[in-house]
Length: 445
Image 1 (cartoon, one colour):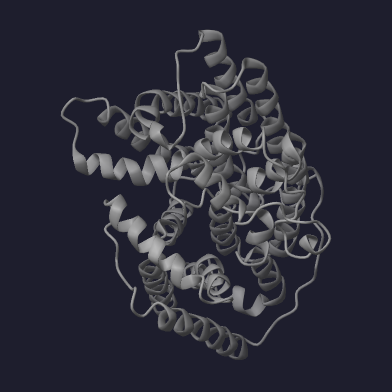
Image 2 (spheres, one colour; image 1 turned 30 degrees about the vertical axis):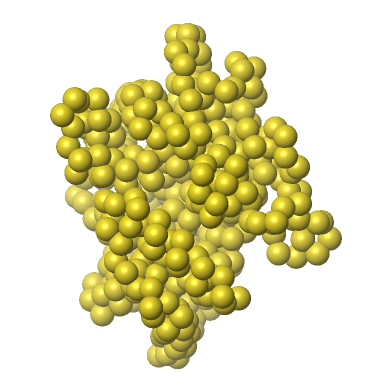
């Protein structure tokens, strides 16, 4: 049983969610056909007309989880579960289901693996949370240490990238990739720069934004936002800016008087998806809308679509990693590639030598390591992590916990679970929530 059943943020209707999710699935499939392949097919995806039976199969696999997923956000990770459903699971199924390079049997096997993996991701909700206790850290010493670490890392990164700080035009792919590739060259000059950037962008600055929003602490909020904007100027990673907007929107969503948070979150994805896909079918489409589509559709909705196609095809004739991409395991298992797996895959499918096709944790950790069987394994491992987070957050500030796990969900959409835990700050969030009750309790919902 789930403890604290009376505490919930939602009155969403299962029927309403099923209908809206089906519309969203149709919109994502439609966008794959009329937007993704025509405009971005040169990145390595193809589509030829499929039978109505195959399209229905893809839609059914996409829709099945909505029949069992929790519609009451009793635990913080339940909202992360929905985020991953809309922005990872559905796009992955659409990619492997509609891509022309796959046979029907392959589509079925891949979809079953994704379905089982995603089902296992929610397995922990059947178990009662563990009480880890409540150990308080004195706020004064905590924040002194926190700012010392944060600003030390940040100043090091700014000094390293001092000659490359550029706010690349979000609507210009050339400007973004020029800044990104030059930033990667600078990053490679330092052993610790990449780790610092990961910690700052995924943990330290998002935590300040979360506390700033919940506590209405403008200083922390501004530091977090400015920090992520300056980090964007080093590598032109749009995720740094996306996290700012995403956390603010999630905060506003859970502060609304209406408690249908999942429905409104879905509508926030569904409406722009339909409008932007439709805009690309017009003869006189707007270049501004095309650029916005590149940010919202290509980088947010369809990233896992690309990666599902890429990695399933790549590992048909390339060796698996057997988890050798994880620090520690690579001491016992030889890593079979020269570059990190994202670069290997990106270079295989595109003309960009340094293109990093980083994928979500199901693909990066599971599929890349042992094939389709790795996907359910990673669903189970991530379920354990969610259980630990929920147990740590139990009886703590729920809104703050939701903001933090939502930030980690964004990381899980793009990188390994193990990277998210360590460099991405999810383990930091788990330990922090459990051991700093006096700090968290100051954040009143």
